Image 1 (tube, rainbow, N blue to C red):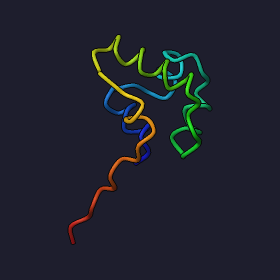
Image 2: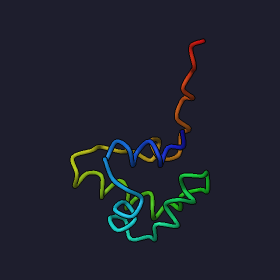
Image 3: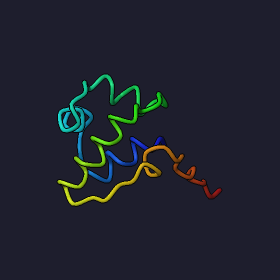
Image 4: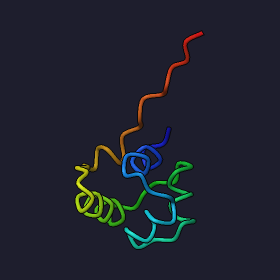
Length: 73
């Protein structure tokens, strides 16, 4: 799972709602979720926006890959 997808899930937001909160388009959020690098200024906006929702984020949360979910067969 991409970090932005994981963060959006933690925030309980749609792509459109996250986009509105950080001042980008829904298409931008979609690109970030598919692996496009998040610009540092957008990352800073995401950190600030998440804090207004009571979620603490760091740049590491945005840029560090999330661990892959392992399947148990």
